[in-house]
Image (cartoon, rainbow, N blue to C red; front, side, top):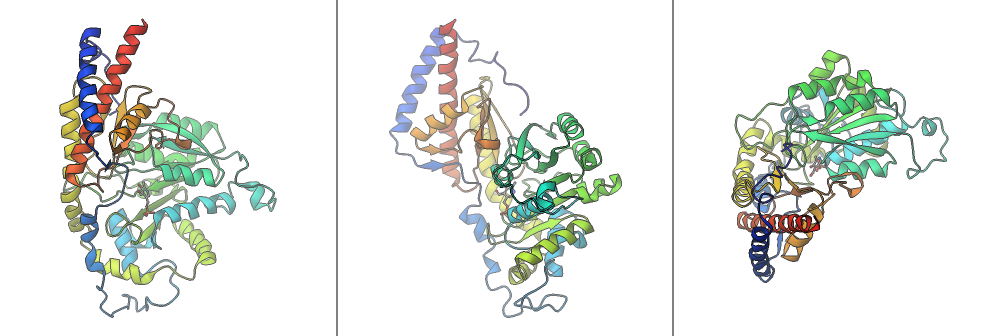
Amino acid sequence: MTAPLRHDGALSGSTDAELAARERELERRYRVACGSNLDLDLTRGKPSADQLALSDALDGILDGDYTASDGTDTRNYGGLRGIPEARTLGAEIMGLRPDQVIAAGNSSLTLMYLTVDTALRYGLNGAAWDGALSRGARGASPSQERPILALCPVPGYDRHFTLTEALGIGMTPIGMTDDGPDMDRVEALVESDPSVKCLWCVPKYSNPTGCIYSPDTVRRIARLPQRASEGFLVLWDNAYAVHDFDFPPPPLENVLECAAEAGTEDGVVLFGSTSKISFAGAGVGFVAGSPNTLDRLEARMSVMTVGHDKVNQLRHARFLGGRVREQMRAHAARVRPKFEAIERILSESLGGLGVAVWTRPRGGYFVTVNTLPHLASEVVSLAGAAGVTLTPAGATHPGGHDPEDHIIRLAPTFAADDEVEAATEILALCIELASVRKLLAKSRAK
Ligand SMILES: Cc1ncc(COP(=O)(O)O)c(C=O)c1O
């Protein structure tokens, strides 16, 4: 994926006459596509109805037995850390110990907001990031520029960026490699700039490149809080921890163990959820970390709620406890063919042309396609006119701006198999057409 596009591929080696002939042929096919009244969508990073149906047994599973393993009546208030079996489920998903996990409400994104907001205004790993606010100078509004920065690997998850921006925190993009964020740059920034206060991470099947952070990257990330200014946090959003296509799945280094070895446990906060294991938006969210982290987050939670939905926690523990792998195999059987179709069609249509590279993830929810520079928006717009909706180019970057305009995120899970195939064929056609036009224009400008 990170290999640069080869500009010596078949297309750029073509003569103008060959390119012009190819352009005419692609335009003919494009006109046919535009006349076909397609209505396809590769923007939706959510489970298909088939995948959701895998968890329909959640409904009614309690059958009147609402009592958790520790005797808690889950129908009542209380228990902010979650019932024991839900914490065990979170630990099973995140590869941790139950005592390191809080099982909370229906969304890990909410827990990320809570974490960043807590660090900003109250302090999580030491003093509040926003010293002025915590000292009581409440004149500042979130929109005011604060000397606080988040490191944001790009391409990345747009909601991390929205959350960060909403809290008035600046964002510094960090390039992604196949091993995770560019760690030389991350370390240099963390060491040289005290306003850098956190690093967003999606360590397994990263959204959207699909890479898995290498063991060396994980160890370097775990050591960051040692080298950074006070209060620095690694925000470890392991949303796709078990969303594998291959079994046994590829491993991910345990960042909390690495942090324990480095003495930085308070600087690493982990997130996960069952959103794409059971029901998206009606699952259980988890946050994990050191005893200090859990204490501080629980204290903040207690201001916001008298207790999370423990009935749903119990449903999930009874349904998924001890059989997460089995559930994920069933998801993989539905999701993997869509990714394989994308790979096959892009390889057949664009392989060797030197006009695009794309990721081949072995899990997760996304494929990233890199076009030639400054063509992604053009491709998205061509595809849109032919009835294929793609995520707007730039959505994978802070502020919605990809300076090179070359990244397109594909989210194939929600669409039916034949829709994914049809949409990918149109995408490949649009990439080639836009590229041929660009190469021709460049050649004619000489
Ligand atoms: C990286 C990442 N984190 C978090 C989420 C949302 O998680 P939740 O449903 O637990 O809030 C998503 C959803 O697409 C995601 O891709």
